[in-house]
Image (cartoon, rainbow, N blue to C red; front, side):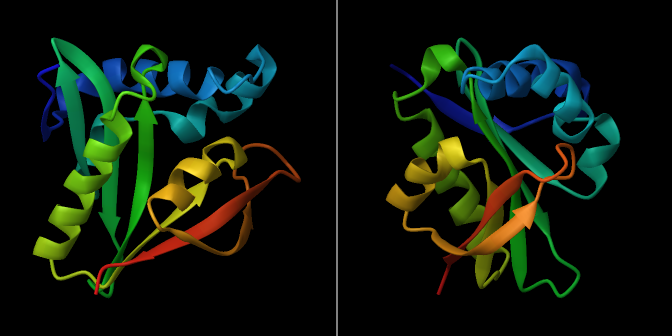
Length: 153
């Protein structure tokens, strides 16, 4: 398998949103749940002003990761990490994470945070992220996500 990572382009926003939705739904969520979080999960062209995105490709885009640096310039948020269901458990997520970590270090960041879907927590724990709390979902009232962190130093 010849997987490449590269910066995502704003004109790919629709394709990237479709990938995110397929990936999220593959965790067993029903259509009502997916519709409730569609707005929050969508990748829009204007997001590219405040965030950097990278994609993994094997003939077609099979995963996406995004980084948003906070106002201090010292830490960032992995604002999105999704892998197409057909490519899960094939190293795509790991390669994307390594790309994000390298770029975050190049920017001089000290840490990366993310809010994890409970279904993805084992993946993030395997990457040495630690749970530092929980946050409420922006789209599903009462639903909690794990707030996780990764130290870059």
